[in-house]
Image 1 (cartoon, rainbow, N blue to C red):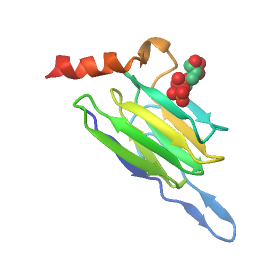
Image 2: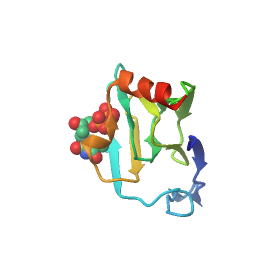
Image 3: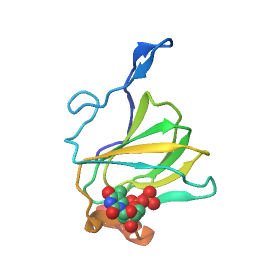
Image 4: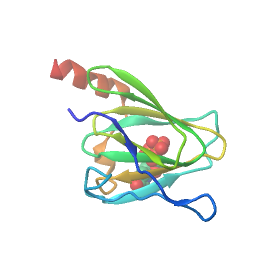
Length: 136
Ligand code: TYD
């Protein structure tokens, strides 16, 4: 099973002129990129996510603000990550149930390994828990 991983993109530039961070296949992104989307204007009271993917791997980056990501794998193990720097990303492999909460004005960039297909989503938590039952 693939494991979540924090990715350090580093940064180019300086305080006087500003910075660039780069996400590039085979350097900092561990899959071929098929899709990029971004999530913004999320109220602080909302939990997004609440799903897992059958195939899709993703890297999440808090371009602005702070994003709390709670991941659960098919063994039922949970981990919480706080993304608060545009220099940092979180690799979220397939088959990880995710919950995301956002600070005011947070912007989440998501880099994905697949094109959008609703069939790739597991949206029922019971269905996700059943994977655990099948695997062990
Ligand atoms: P979803 O992935 O459920 O968002 P979140 O987990 O952040 O709440 O997507 C929300 C809606 O947008 C859902 O109806 C599917 C649609 N959508 C697309 O059509 N294409 C995409 O690439 C994505 C990510 C979502």
